[in-house]
Structures are given as C-alpha cells and as structure tokens.
Length: 252
Image 1 (spheres, rainbow, N blue to C red):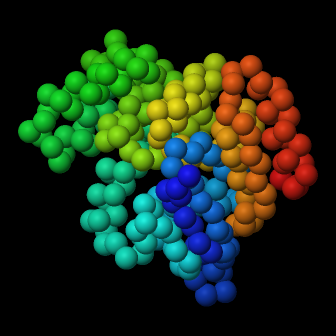
Image 2 (cartoon, rainbow, N blue to C red):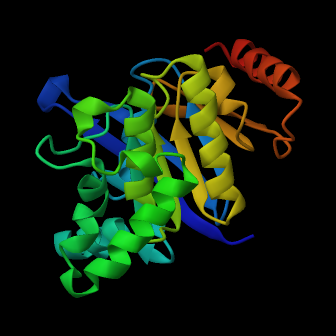
C-alpha cells in the first residue's frame, strides 16, 4: 500500500530563547492511502500539532512532511492552500460556520469561491452528501436551528465536497453525546470504506477503537502504536479493551 503522507523527524517549536520548547520532538510517522488511523495522548502531547504539521496547516522547524510525493516545505502559501482545499478535508470539534448562511450555503461556500460557473453541480453534490449523512431536510435551516450532531454532519459534508484524499478530524466527537458520537464514527467508517484516508485526533478510546491503527503520543514524541483489524460492528468491547491495555502499557 502506498504512503499518502510521510512525516520524517518532524520538529515543531513554540516560544523563543530559553522559553522555546519542542511540541513535536523528532516525530516520524506515515499514513497510507485509504488508511483509517487515530492519534491518542494526554493534553499537550502534540496530537493536534502533528495533525496541523501533516496537513501543511502549520510549518515545521525541522524534518519534513511529504504529501503525495511533494515535500510541503517546497510549496508556497498559495500552493499549500490549494492542496488543502482540493486534496484534504477538515472536521473540527466545533465546526466554523457563518451565522448568516443556512446549512446548505455553508457547505457549498468554500467550493463556490473557485468555481461559480458550476454552481448547479456543486449544489447538487452538497445535497447528495447531506442525504448520505442524514441531514437532507435541514438545508434551509441556519446553524442555530440544528443540534451539535447535525452541525457536525454538515461539517463532514463540507469536508467531502472536493473528493479529498484524506479527512483530518480534530476531536470531531468531543462535543457530542455518546449516540451522536457513534453515528459520527459510522459516517467516518463509510467514508473510509469508499477509499478516503481518515486521521482522527482523539482522547476517546471508543473512537480510537473504531480505527485500524492507533498512534500514541506523549511529550511531543511517538511512544507506541496499536494495529487492529477492520471494525466488524460487533467487537467493540474487545477493541476498547486492547486500546486501554496499550495505554496502560505505555503509561498514558
């Protein structure tokens, strides 16, 4: 299986002088095409910083990140922005949407900026995605008229509009109740089954247990990994137990 992203000895520092510290301290990792992975670790371990580095959202102070055979350090800001918009999708704990637009318009807005001539096709695709994730009837509502779970589904639709190679999720279930979180993970699993790679940053063992490979971080370093078979729908208790045992084994 080909590697979609390669992180080689990544260093990311914050602060200056004697107060400078490495949030990522020589991290090497990878994500295969079509892989479903999670990153776990305590607060401040560097999970989200790693996601931002691998996606080119943040530059690095050392090492390199390669996406689809391109060294991100060789790309200009416009090239990076184009790559993120066309090749990557992002889902965050709190979706950032405009209050003056309805749900449908929030989903299509990023795609419309570059392709107004195809407005009808873009709108049609957005409606197909909304139907797929179960919010087709909400297109005219504004963002204050839907639940957190419904808003997160809209965020997933927006992330999928350009057929990305990978979806990055930063604690995407963190603000949801257990039922909504499970529904979100079902959607991520379906996206992955269609061939899109998914990388989730999470503190939740239930979420991580749905993936196929879990990377564990502590103090800016990669300290362990757990591989699991593809989720079969009936083996959650055993998978969560394996995650918890691994966490205890490596002390996080």
